[in-house]
Image (tube, one colour):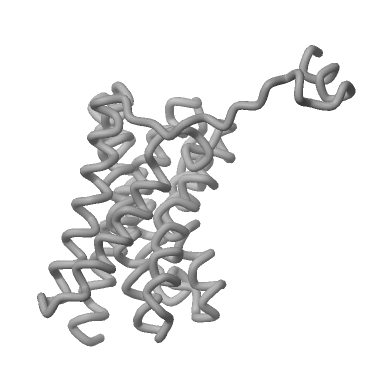
Length: 219
């Protein structure tokens, strides 16, 4: 494994831990059993990367090494052992989710570029890698996915990818765009929560809807 591949593998593992803990923590809040919580954590950690690898037509990353499955199990044990700290309040979920989101955006961009795709495709794959695991997690725990809410979530992934793009145009070492991307994603998520930033809601006047649709809404 070359230095670049090793670095990406380490980022993937750290992102897996972060996303797995966020998923397991939310499953615990929904009173899932240990196995159910593990499944939610695993899907959260591998969901986005799986979609990315299928779209790029490359071997699915977690099928190449048992490490990702094992690390998710370790994350479950960590949540069980330290549940009083990790399960208390939503701040823990937010922290781990923001870290996992940032790291996986970087991984998505890097892997796409390594396959020879243009930067705009890499940005899209960064968004998919970062956010689709969270979409699957929220569906499994019967929550409205963050991806589709007014929260700055997918938008943070997009901003991180664009920052990566812009910083990569310079002659700076590759680690600079990677760090800039991750900091942008985490920074936007933190700022959005702290200052209650959100995107405008797509609102439609019910009077503009067809009569049968209005009747369904009233029901």
